[in-house]
Image (tube, rainbow over all chains, first blue to last red; front, top):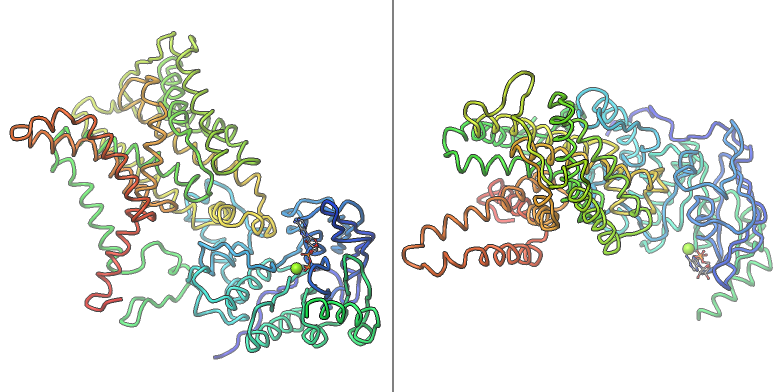
Length: 279
Length: 352
Ligand SMILES: Nc1ncnc2c1ncn2[C@@H]1O[C@H](COP(=O)(O)OP(=O)(O)O)[C@@H](O)[C@H]1O
Ligand SMILES: [Mg+2]
């Protein structure tokens, strides 16, 4: 198949690579007696893949939920730099955060299950679309032009993720691995400034994992999207990421390059401890 | 382009068209022809029933926008129909404004009141929301009955003949002329609703229904979307109420009680939740059920007189039975049955 030149940038950030995109400081989140996050601080850099790892229950998903506004931390700052200003995400509602260009996938797939793949991806365009009632009901004119214009970017994502064949299928009828891919696609359609992926490879077989890793690298290398990724599997993380933060029982126990983190005694302890506990 | 191997589109524009195959366009042509032939084929009695169906279509489409497409339950339909009917009647009758203005006022006011009574949906869902919308039903009908200024203390308003841009609708052949008007309005309502769900606004309704957390994470303002869905849905229902007022030339609170709310819910369940076509089928089915039962019992009156006597009880029983049977055997409604028939025809003689 002839490859087309990219016509749309999928990276929604105005920052130059190397600048600080996200600064998290002193974040505390507790559920009843459980401290899901205790004074967590880290920062993500434009143009990098940043992994957050740690044993089950370490607070990884909670951290992502705080960034995207689904959880509200009791204390701390989560600052997003857009190139036009700074925004404290810790006090914003989720849909406002999405409008700043923070896109995400979920650990347990949260697609719009009755809608087709295309409709799900088009919802990724929501923040970029206008939705006035009367033109929508008339269809002919502005509404149709808008649908067609946004469809072009969506098709580029469809090509990138190789889901052409299932475009018109209802997502709930698709296999798990494909659904995971559609969820990545939906987030990409937002042209994110920051892409948050919560265990994008969980529950996949080796082949599907390799595909997904390839897609994430494509998104990052070819399209310049900054990725913050949660992953359980150490090996995957070491291959993919530029920087790794390690959580254990809600605390940040290490933060650095993959090599630094791999050899950090505290990390080895946490992982061995978790394995011993699980085994 | 349709070929033996399927439909091949050359532009997104052609792919986004509602009707793509020859069969689909042929069916549309048949429906249009049938609609045009209707007044010449059926008698005045049945044409009046068709007219009530056309009004019900507008209301059922509206309710389906809220319940089927946005996943917010409402049993306040009767109340919202009342708002539309009383508003249009008062603006037309007392203020002596043109019918179009009266109907527009009815649509807008019902949308606003619907949005207001939709506010509990921001906190409540399912059964609790149903009870909250029941409050809308009860309060609105109570106001219509008791507010003297509104109805002069009687609960009734008589409405003068319907005049549309100088044309007195129904002055000649009453049912036929009304059929023409209602067909156009119902057609436009269906067209508008179909379009809504091809665009971002309608998709955001469905996103809230399927996964509100993910919707928020995609930038959908869930609060706003729910209120908007209540407003749009109520706007359609208000239009149906206004049409009832002008068509029947009288407005009385007794037409807008809780059983009307249940009837409309039955229409969209039987027709198919979350489909526009289903709203049409359901409105037709539930509106035809009583007259068909009456006709049937009249036919057997000579041979089985007891059956004809039991007709009112029979109607209620059949009504309940139909809903239960659909919920059990075809929860996706008449629309899904029709989809299967079409699929069968398309792939015949191959079994799928
Ligand atoms: N919504 C919630 N309600 C109560 N406890 C929660 C909630 N979300 C997370 N937790 C708790 O917070 C801790 C961290 O969970 P989570 O962030 O999901 O971990 P991870 O993603 O690293 O496996 C766990 O103890 C979990 O039980
Ligand atoms: Mg998790």
